[in-house]
Amino acid sequence: MKKTYNIEVDCANCANLMEEASNKVNGVVKATVNFMALRMSVEFEEGADTKAVMKEVLKACRKAEPDCEIEL
Image 1: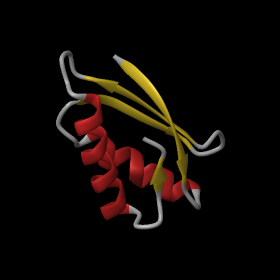
Image 2: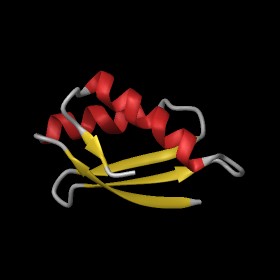
Image 3: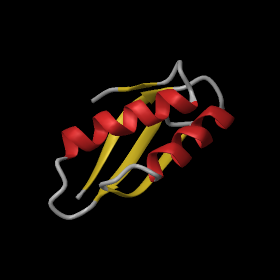
């Protein structure tokens, strides 16, 4: 399953940090952050609880970039 989320991030480097952090979270097959569109696309593992995974993604992203936001 693939979902797209609106994000708030200050710079392209921060977006790259968010993408790297997101891809390390269990339940995520692939995460892609588009800084220009302020969107994040996340492909989830089969049967994953998307809400729980996205909470972990947000935690991971905030460790990499404390000011980031993801509209869940």
